[in-house]
Amino acid sequence: MEKSEIKKYIAKRVAKEFHDGDVVNLGIGLPTMVPAFLPDDVKVILEAENGMVGAGAKPEVADPCISDAGGSPASIATGGAFIDSATSFGLIRGGHVDATVLGALQVDEKGNLANWIIPGKMVPGMGGAMDLVVGASNVIVAMEHTQKGNHKILKECTLPLTAKTCVTKIITEMGVMNVTDKGLELVEINPEFTVEQVQEATGATLIISPDLKNIEA
Amino acid sequence: MAKKITAQEAAALVKDGMTVMVGGFLSVGGANEVLHAVAESGVKNLTVICNDGGQPKFEHGVQELIHNGQVAHLIATHIGVNPEVGQMMNAGTMKVTLVPQGSMAEKIRAGGYGLGGVLTPTGLGTPVGEEAGKPVYTINGKEYLFEEPLHADVAICYGTQCDQYGNVRFHGTTRNFNVVMATAADTVILQADELVDEINPDDVIIQGILVDYVVDGGAK
Image 1 (tube, rainbow over the protein chains, first blue to last red):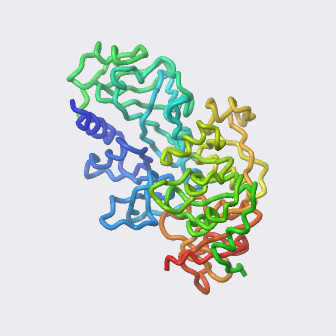
Image 2 (cartoon, each protein chain N blue to C red; image 1 turned 60 degrees about the vertical axis):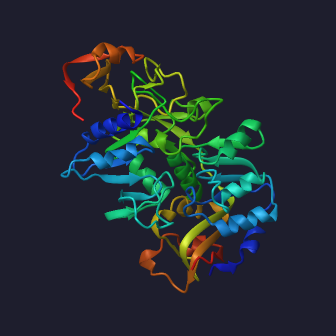
Image 3 (tube, rainbow over the protein chains, first blue to last red; image 1 turned 90 degrees about the vertical axis):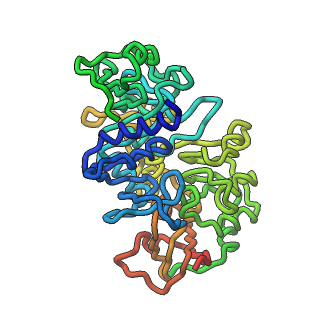
């Protein structure tokens, strides 16, 4: 798969996680592609941590006073509300957001997540990520399975953490893994790969679900 | 009554070494005329509390103060959009303290609402948590990190409309940190796109009693 195809494939699979009416916060990049793949009967309410519950479609004419959390022009959907930062994170931390989808530098078998700093190299800051992964009921990591062949899914994260034991599910172009008490359980696989190939691309020992299914993306 | 002043008069309220809260989220909802005047005033050695380090693609904003070397210490949640912040941090010319966005909002809210701090699960097990020496408390079996309140000498906030009483209303996602910052500083400067006689009390988001000075941003 080409890189753009990989992202689409992952976003398409992530879209199946949502139920009609779910409140969802999407990280920057790949996660923002997810709404395009939602089935017609599933409408989610998008929370944008910079100040919206109910973010709308990309506007044809930009209003300089309405942006998404990445600073890009945005719109508000019918039924939406504008909020300040304290309210926004009150909603996030208070468990009023059903799911957040975000990328990762590393994620490990305990569900620990690292996605905000590579010491000495890249320090963008955590922004709202630490609050989002602590507060959202479901934390879905959506990313390419490896970084140029290097493991990103590990037995134990080596980079500074964003939060401990927060990730509930990992969705990559190779498979879908649930974070369980016993470790990472591979529950769906891309039929283009074998279980052995997925394991080889993973730095933690996978538990293979007895009900392992093919991803239908 | 909030006193109407110019951006330059507002800038003169910011003195060397002060702690200044700056509202806005990237380019949205910032008091850019006032910030530009502060940049031109040459005031230095500031501690700035702001969501981010601004966006270099825009002429006016917090990034101007950073670029001029007027900020000794930046307390922010995200600095990736302005590469100069990381460069200055690595070169040691500006101290940077990163705070999770939700914790930042609550720390400021605590500072403005008379609380001694907040207990939050955010940051536990990370470099901004107990590793940074912050106390951990267990409440009803769940761990929380203690975060101290934030307070400032001056807050430079934005509003869409401000009335003669200092009441403020907002349009769009411009509320962001402006609302809490207006509670948490000794002196609050509010730049509005439009100055009006009176705002419907139903629509007031920042109460006029919090606002000391109003600057006409001239956008309308």
